[in-house]
Length: 370
Image 1: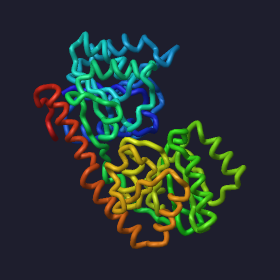
Image 2 (image 1 turned 120 degrees about the vertical axis):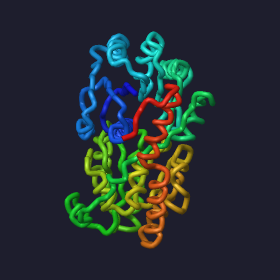
Image 3 (image 1 turned 90 degrees about the horizontal axis):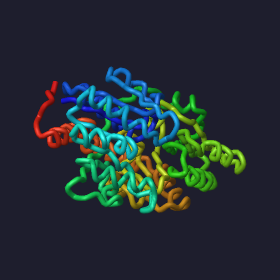
C-alpha cells in the first residue's frame, strides 16, 4: 500500500507528533510505501529523518493560502500514485481536494484535534472546514468531545485516540541531577508542558504559582514550551516577582523533566486528547487539567489518575497541596495513570486502528505486517 501524508509542518505540536508516531509504527511493522509532503522546511522532530521516508517541501511563496500549492501537490500525487491521501489539518485537506477528485484517490482527513470549534459560521475557516468534510471520505478526531463539538456526520466520523511508544518513557536518569540542571532546589515540582500561546493559558499557571507560594514555599512551578506568549509570561514573572517559577522554553528532553517532577498540570480551557497529559500519566505522575468540557475526561479518571478542575487558582492550589502532602495518593494516582496509558493509548493500538481504517477505505488488505 502506498500512502501520501500531507501536513503543514513538522514543527513541535500535537498533530505533528501523532503523525510521526504513526509513521514510526508503519515503518517498523508494515511494508507500506510512504511519502510526506509539508509546506514548511523546518523539522523539529529530528528523529523523523531516521525513518528515511521521502519528504517534499511545497513552500508557500506569497500567501499563507497560496493557490499554487493545488497544482504542485497534484503533480506529486500523479507521480507517486498513492492508494490513499492522508491529510493532517484544514488547509492541507483543502489543497488535496482537486487531486482526490481528478485522480479518484481516497482522502482521509485528520481535521479535529481539539474539542472547541474556534471559528464562527461566517468565516473563511468554516468555509474551508465544511468543504473539507464534504470531500473527505472519512474525518478523524482524537476525542469524542471533538466529534461532538464539530458536528461530524455519523457516516464519516472516526475516533482514534493518540498513541505513544512506551519505550520513550523508560527513563534511566538521576532525578536530583535533572533538578539541579534546571535550577530547582525545592522539594516538589509542578510541571506544565505546552506551547506558550493564549490558548494554553499560562496566565492561569502563574496565578496558581503565586497562590501556592503563599501557602507552601517548597513547590517549584516549571513551564516547558515556547511561543508568542513567552515574553508576556516572562514579563509577568519579573514584574510581579512570582517566585519559584522557572520558564525553560522549548526543550527536547521532556520525558526526563516529567520524570523528575511530582505533578503534571495543563491549564488550557479545552483539549482533544493532550499529548502532555498522556506523557505525564505514562511517567506515573498525577494530573491536574482545567479542560472541563473537552477530551481530558476521556483519559483522566477523576480522583483515580488525576483531576479535571474548575478554572480557578484557589481550587487548583488546593488539589496541588492535597497531592504534595500525601505521597501515597500521588503514587496511587500515578500508577493508575500508567495503567490507562498502557491499555488505551499505545502506538500499537493507534497504529492498528489506522491500518484497519486504511484497509476499510481502500477496500482490500494490501499491506504486509513484518
